[in-house]
Length: 279
Image 1 (cartoon, rainbow, N blue to C red):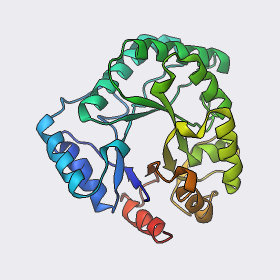
Image 2: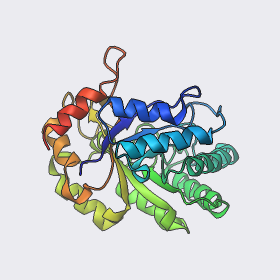
Image 3: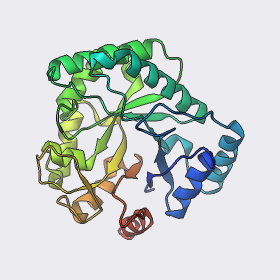
Image 4: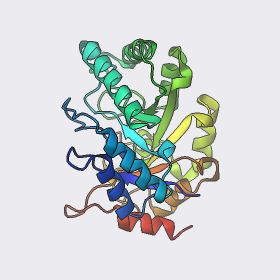
């Protein structure tokens, strides 16, 4: 079964129920949300009654909570030693919030080395993840996202992610989130997705892929720019994205749209309908 959804809002006044209702309005059977604004540390308390109501609504509409994705805030940067204490503390708090919501997966941008070099950045990420996971009692899996390589981003290749995973003691607490725009902009030719997945499987292992962010790209292959485009409107193209979405070896992995709004409106209902028409 196709597991398809998009990023949805999470607001204090509507809670998780509002997130589920938004997902359903798009014709989705999963979704991704932030537990608060991704650009700051402001977090409201979690209303457990609201969560219970949200679960009831999800059950009634065949949304599996184990396929729902939470995204960590952008301001966490494990690669920057100047932000070590802040990033570790905030990531630890987010893991607890994800557990309180009853979700399994937290997508995390590995971080940016801010001019220190990839090797130093990776070393800092490993140190931070080991510190956080050693002091964490949740069952949440952190999904390291594949990055475009914009600026000093770490995680632009499968090999970089492998070094991080290999350096973390609790490897079972780590997975990977593929992002199609990021992969394209990092230089992976998605028109030959068999080869991309074969490479990933050899380097890391396909079993580690727990989420796919489905985005077209405004940029050519290998541009290292990271600018998402709407489905079928960018350089990756509709046929290639449909092949990825329905790729048999990833059929049980949730696909999440993060495409741009059009004239201030979410495009997800139309894009999900288009994707389903190929089923």
